[in-house]
Length: 119
Image (cartoon, one colour):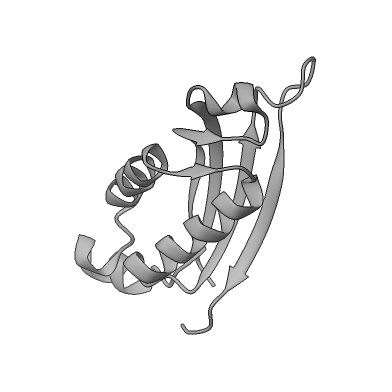
């Protein structure tokens, strides 16, 4: 299966358990990997048969700005559902890095994979 990916997409969102984290948005870095058959897009050179990763990126940023989760796990679950429901993508790999979560550490985060069936 072909893959479409977005690496280190920077989003701002309200995330965190602690009171100080609830005062302002934080930056998350997202790595997204999507199973997608790219053959038809490649044969036709037509965007309608491809994943429009610019539109997807904008939608994720827009969505993230209005969210307010405590846990990365909840953010991830809801983002995967959004990608599946709005873009029709059934298999999603998502890695979320929260750079400011732990002092003296480049990043902490989670990786999830969701398979909603299909393809």
